[in-house]
Image 1 (cartoon, chains in turn yellow, purple):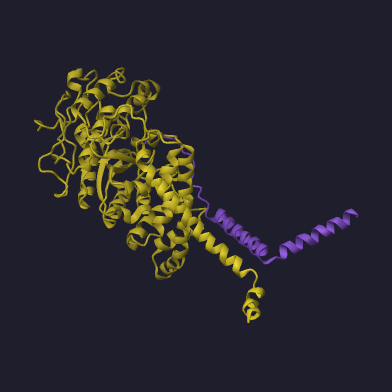
Image 2: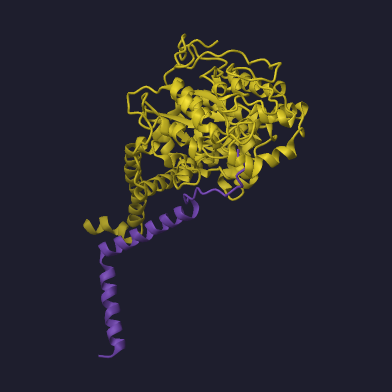
Length: 491
Length: 58
């Protein structure tokens, strides 16, 4: 009897070891995944407060931006507000350090801190893939998305090298094989992703899935369905590799938790004081030019750039670029995705640097087309938009011609994020009308027409917190009486 | 005893040791695990690094 029972095993000596190896191949990654998630959740709050989060070339950047594990942990942590964006989330200048949201909210003075995701050229199509990778976790969660006007107005489509430089096979795979998203949305996204063929050239499974989805014929869709299980398994392997990357980073880099400037938890932020401090600090770094641009950048490149570009663009060319730009397609895809996943997004945009664009020959009337279109796009998806159009003329808002934030702009951004987290986004006025005169002052909301040497005196240069611009707030989000400090008494 | 005899004896001992069921089981399991790890490393490696691009201030 015993011999009979053992005979089949003796005839197949590889069967039991192979089965054992397969079981171990499932159990060991599962146990590791459990440990990794536990470590990630324990570390995520401290990690969000670490300045490594906003270092441009730090070791955390690829782990955070190309993976999913940290995003997932952040989304599932109540005291973290994820913000997706590009270079404006990164620390550019040392004088920005104290006013960056990561440092300002480091000790959660109002109950939360931010979790910035993204680096230069993280355009809407990249954000779309990042958010697809965390899918159902987004339901009911607030997510801030910061877009850059340059994506919509300086070229008709995101640069291939910028897209490739932010591309993540994990995120792309999660979008391609994400059955929680509608097929229509996946197909539309696939068609856009295939416009950057070099990113999928060496990924046959992903390319096959995207091409068949994009084709849309019954046969192609059947082929896509056939490889769907394989794609899901492939994504699971990549997710484990991502967990390993995070765990390795956390082992190698003990998290710094000291906080140099942030108020202690429970102390409300004094926004007017922060605005005054930011303006006073930046003034000393932007006093060698009439546009309020960073001194060092002005000397290094912007002075020469202005000479080369002055009056080289027109209202018509700007409007044409804004109208046909593919980035709007990607933004719509992103907002469709957020709607399908049940997220509660806020759309932020840096303002254009009015003084600089005036010099190029692009008037405020042309620039307002960008603001208007952004608001209309947000409105279609019931997404509040804060575009800071009323700071188009604010010389202390951006430190360069691309709209990267100066200390004052960072404080405004942080103020809006604080309001967003606490359901207190102020209702905003219509787009300001073009100003008939070249002067500018504290009347935030009016665009400037800068004349040479027209920089206002210090007392006028600081703008009290003024109207960030949201076109449509969900009634349930919005406090009927805006409570952001500093707005009191302002029109 | 010559060197060849010693080698032959070692080989016999090793063969006997490897013929034990539990040794064979462990060795084959490691062998199959190696294949799995190799496949994952080849086709599912978590290299998420991106090509560098010239930062253009966006």
